Image (cartoon, rainbow, N blue to C red; front, side):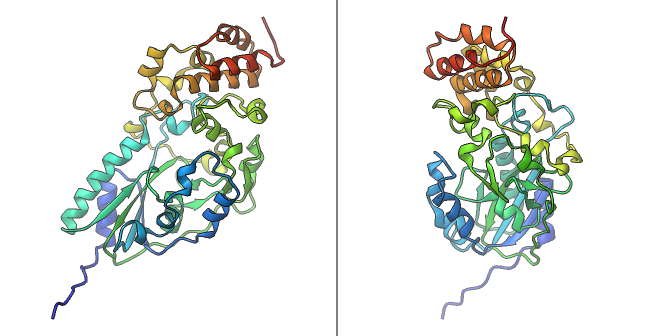
Length: 345
C-alpha cells in the first residue's frame, strides 16, 4: 500500500530570515486560503478597471492561490521600501518610478529568496509574482500583516507609509507560524480622499482607475488624455502621488536609501524638458525605468497636458513648437495646452 507522506513544515523564522537576507525589508506569511471574492468582482462589474482588460482574466486564480499553484499551502508576502533621501519630491515623475524599474529589482531578490528556500526545503515548489501575474499582492500583504489597505487602496505600513513595492511567493509547504492582519491606521482620516482632484477614491480602499491620474499617465498613453480630467493634471507626467503626499503616515515615513532605488536623471527633468525630449534622449533616460511604460509620445503628451493644466508661462511656446508633431497624441495635447488661460508670452 502506497503511503503519501506530508512534507515537513517550514520554519517561519527561517523563511523570514531568508527573505530579509534576500533584500526584502518586509515579510509576512499567510495560509493559502481563498480571498474574499466580493471586492474584486464588484470593482470589475462597475468597470472601474477601465481598459485594463487583463484584470478580467484568470479571476479564479487571482482569488485562490490553490488554483494558481496546485498544492499551495503558504503565501509569502514580501515588500521593500523604495524611498531614499535623494528622491525628488517636486519631480513630475512619481516617487516609485524615479529609480530602476522595481519589477527587475524585486525579481532579482525573488530568485535569491527561492534559492535560499530550496536549501531549507529541497524539492519545494514555488510560484512568484511582481504585479504581472494573476495575484493580488496588496490583499496578501494586508492578510500577512505587512500593513493595511489605506483609504486610497495603497498598502500602508507604520514605518514606511505607502512607499513600498510588493511581491509574493507561493509555497507548497506549510509553515509552523502564520501572521495575522493588523488594524487599519486610517480610521477617522480622509486626507487622501480630499487630496484627490478627480474624485477617483470613490469608497474606502476603492479606486476608480478611469478617474485616476496615475492610470491616465501610465495605462492610457496610447489614447488622448481624458478631456474631463485634463484640468486636474497639475504637475504630474508619470504617475500621481497627490493622495500619498497627503497621507500622515507618509509624512513620518522612514527612507531606506536602498541603492537599487536611487533616482535617475529622468527624475530631475522639468515638465518643459520632458515635453521637449528627442527620441534618442527619451530612450537613454527611460531605459530600465518604469517611466518607459509611457512610451515616447505618451510621456510628451502627459507633460504637455500637465503644463497646460498648471497654466505655466512656458506652455505656449512649447505647445506651439509641437503643434506639427508627427504624433496625433502630442498634437492634441499641444492644442489643448495652448488653449488654456494663463500668463502667455
